[in-house]
Image 1 (cartoon, helix red, strand yellow):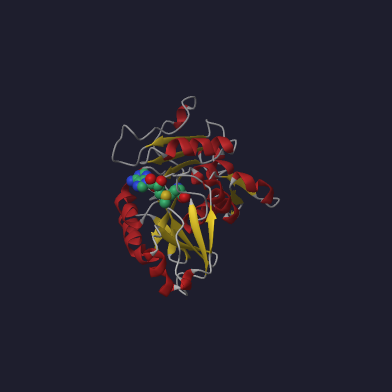
Image 2 (cartoon, rainbow, N blue to C red):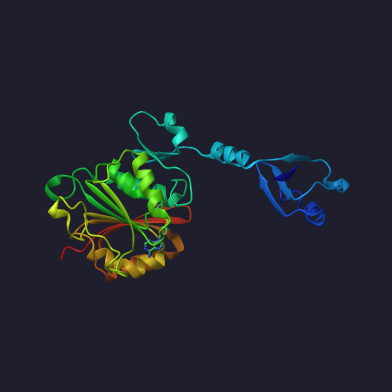
Length: 287
Ligand SMILES: C[S@@+](CC[C@H](N)C(=O)[O-])C[C@H]1O[C@@H](n2cnc3c(N)ncnc32)[C@H](O)[C@@H]1O
């Protein structure tokens, strides 16, 4: 790939951008104070933009640069890292390894971090039947990050569902990478309500008490309109009083989520804000 590196930013050199397009650039972007102009072939550039340099780059350069930009993400008792940053997890933190890839959920989005923090605040190891650990349902699992976080935090069983089939093998690989055994985490294509055949039963077959579709905790990083649509399903899939953790909510859309939770008689509704994003926790109705 042929890239022309021009010092400056898209803002400060706005007047020069037309010259690059005019010279045949196929794309422009800015990284760390350098404008990158993509070309199919070298060409003579006019004087105002001749202070840059041509570079041949390979895909490996891109991957290396992307890898260098990733940092560990601390979320409560968990630190989310790509595999090559294992050494950077502080003592006492639970490492959660996520291979950055095609599925949403590397931990770098505020909503993922907020949800892991909220899971970290719940006592997942002692919730649930006989205090033996919570059964957690993760709706819209993506990379599996929230279900895997729940398992690492002591949940007895975590179940991730996603309507996008591409996420499921990725989530399974991430669970294996974190050493979470298959009987403690499961991922299936599916959603709540729409297709009962696709909605899996509660857990490992060898434990009869798991064969229920009511969970101790439900977490969903989706978006406000979907939380509104699914609020009744959330209540139906939680034990009475079970914690609900919702994120993916733009703060401007909070009234929609508040109204949906009130309609379905959720209690103890609390909100945490991070910039334009919100996380809402609540308790399922008691009857
Ligand atoms: C914002 S990502 C969240 C990923 C991950 N749970 C996290 O917290 O980083 C939302 C995920 O929800 C999935 N999704 C969207 N609509 C859904 C639905 N109706 N039911 C289940 N999953 C859905 C998407 O495919 C996507 O993987």
